[in-house]
Structure formats: structure tokens, C-alpha cells
Image (tube, rainbow over all chains, first blue to last red; front, side, top):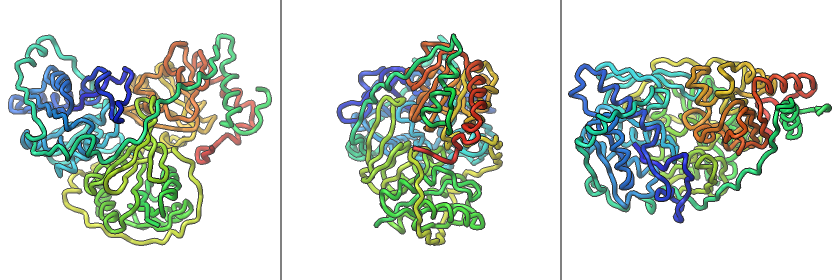
Length: 265
Length: 330
């Protein structure tokens, strides 16, 4: 799970060209809530829910603990928060490294579940990178998930086709917002979450050196950021008098989206 | 001059438009080498097509062994080819599949990765549009071979005769790369309209359609455009997720985007704000989409769109010569 700046707030860059996480409230990335939800459903519909453990894992700043708490309130059993100043500014490659080490430390999970992408960087590559690092099969972008014993079958809308993909556990699974509505934690669940185990790992707990991650070790570098000049306010036409369609056709014609003379416009 | 590997995005040998764009971009960085992973008996057309866009070399990789196994084997192919030819850069289409291949490849090669580039210039230095389009970011890869996933419609494909020297390449695919298998695949139903991610014009509908996409589809057809939808329309069950534009659907950057009855939630804007021109029709004069629109019409799409279609039909010359989908301009 990722702790991200609230997408509805004004997000900006810090002077070192990393995402400014200080000035904007953070929260559990909305798309990761779907992964938590599906993990809980898999647990609940398994033959032996008591024996299935859902661990919520987040790599992020200190405040990222809020994302872990949210997952515990939803119903996850254990929270793990990896936080270390040296991790700040990590790119997707380094993030996947930290996540892979954390997954290994947690144990040997049968399923490593992720949201389809974060709502800030939005690269959508970490699940695939995690599968690569853990040398596990990847089933990504699932909208429908079926688990039968150690077999997982998903359906997804690929780039050109709708596909069913299957693999044997253990595996990495990422889910889309089509996978099913996300539960709201009840008051009782919120209270219960306070008693759940919550662990914090530092980089050294994961056997990683500070110079393997973070902004200085990033594999790509932002060389400049420009705030987009506000789009010059376009023309606004009110269609009350029925002139809207004419204005639209005029726009199409004058910008050469339709060819040929549109004489009466 | 160093080679620049371009992964060919194709369906049964028919190359998709973004591949022509990638080859055009690749020529700025070095000598483009197209990498075709597919059926060898499908390759002839693809070879001719990539040659037309300047491919100096074409690596043919027979996929008979890996056809059913998604992205992991393709990443292995590119890794082994990259080790062999030490390319100046590796370019893929910034689609779901392209990005996953790029991600795995970056880990394998120990190379930096940039996704969703809307421009690539010498260096290579990329341009990305982030935070729902509020910022433009320029970036470069600092370690290893730059791996860059480029958004469709980011540049106009320019033809250029390439030597197109064909070379077969055999990769060794590990067993673990074959651990996730495609069990069933249903090609997207052909609508007769251009592909959403590639279209030069997109007409999209949202909540304001009230569930009837007919006016959206008719306008799309009048303009040779693709049809898209907002998440609200998809969540309401009015149209399939395959048409969704936004953070969790497709990202599009057509020359023209026409939004009908879409308020412009930030998640939607993330998927369309790099469109070159934006027209919005919405009954709510306060809808945030109007902040982005080059032309805003405060009105009901169910009234405005059909009238536009009528007006366009009246300009028959204009319509029959309406800008097609495969002729990117400007």
C-alpha cells in the first residue's frame, strides 16, 4: 500500500524535485483500498478464515502509519510500516526493492496483493517489479478474482482483449477499481484495530543500506518541473439560445478538426 | 550510431500506430531497431511497416514458445537483446502491458525507467505531465540503459526509409517467466471506430448522458472519433470498462477531446488532460471540466451533440473528408 498526498489537494514539488509530502495531507492511496478489500474477501470466503492472515504493508514517511491503520480498521490482521529517512524520494525501482525485502521478512505469503497503481506517481509498474524481484508469477489488473486451493484465476481488461489468466500460488496480484466496492470500517472495527499488532521496520531491519534507496540513489532524475500555466480560459457559450452546437462546429472548423469549408458557420 | 530498441506493438502482425510514433522518436536518439515478438508468418507486414518509419534493423523473435505467457517472457527477450547490442535506449508504448514489460526489464537490467513520457528529446530527456496536468516534468535516466515508455499520440509519426535489415533473434526463456498463463482471451469487439488509445479525436460521455450513449456515438462517427466514458458512466453500468478514460482506465492524448456530460473529476482529468484541444459540454456551468476546456458549452449534450451531427451532415464535403483516424496532423 502507498501513503500518498491527497489527490484533491494542491500537489506540488519540493525544491529537490521530489513530491512535496509535507504541505499536503496524506492518506492511503484509494486504489490500494481495493487490494485490501479483495484480500479480506479472499480471507473471508476461504474455508478457514481464522488460518488466513492479512498483513498490511506500507513503505513511506512516518505519517504513512495512517495508511496502515486504515487497512487494520478495514480488517487486516497485522500492520507493517517500513519507514526510514533514507527511503524518502525513492523511485519505483527502489520502492520495489524495499517492498520485496519487507515481503521476505514478513514471511512467505501466498498472495502479495497490490493496487493497480498509486494515485500520485501513477506509474503502475511496482506490482510487476515486485513479481520480478520475488521471482513470482504476476497476475495484474484483475477485475475478477477466483481462488481455488492454490490456483488463482483472474479476469482483466487488457490493452486489446479481455483475458483470463491463471497461476499457482504464491504469486503477485494487482487489482483494479472494478474488482468490487470497498468497505467502510465500522466503529467497532476502528476500536478493534487499535489492539492489532503493528510493526515498524527500518532499512537496516531489512538488510538494506541507505545508499541503495532514496532520492540520491534514484535511477532517474527529474531535471526540471514547470507548473503549467493556467490554461487560457477558453470561450464559454451558453446553449440556452441554442447557439452551442453552432459554436462547437465553428470550433471544429477553425481548428481544422473537420476539413473543407463550413461555409455557413 | 548506437541502436535504439523499439518494442513493436502489434495485433497479429498489424503494427499499432504508437509503434510508428516510437520509431519516429527513436530516430532522435540513435538508429532505430524494431523488435518484433510474434508469429514469424505474421512478420512480413510488420517488417514493411516499421521499415517505412525508419527502422534500420528488425529483430524477429518467434513467440511460439511464449505466446500464452504475457509480459515476463517479453521482458526476458528484451533483456537478452539489450545485453547483446548495448542500445542507447529502449522504447516501449506506455500501455498497461508496455509499462509492465518496462518495469520488469528495468529491474533485470539495473536500468532507470520513465513511464508516460509525452515527449522524448536527445539526451534522452523526457517530458511527463503529472499531478493531473498541473505540472510538466523533465527527467532523465541516470543509471543503466534508459528505458522509456511513451504515451500514444505524443508525436506525429514521420515516415523515413529504413534499411529494415531483418535479423532473427532467439532468446532463452526461463521456466519462471512462464508461470502466469493466459487461459482465455476475447479480443475487444470491433466497433468499427478507431482504438481509444490511438484515436486522433475522442468523444466521451459521462453522467450527463443519462445512460444513453447514442448521441456520443453518433458524434464520434461523424468525426471519425473513438468513444470514451467517465468512471461515473462505467460504474453506472452504462458502458463497458474498456471505454473508461482516467486514472484507472485508459489515458488518451488526442488532438481533440470532446467531453459530454462529464464534470471533470481529478481522476478523469488525469486520463485526458494532455489532449491538445478540449471541448466540454455540460449543463453545470460550475463543472471543473470547463477550467480545462478551450471551448465550453453550457448545455445538454443530448441536445447539443445531435445538432452538431446535423450541422456537420449539412456540410457534406466537410464530412466525407473529415479527418480520419490514421492521419495525425500537427
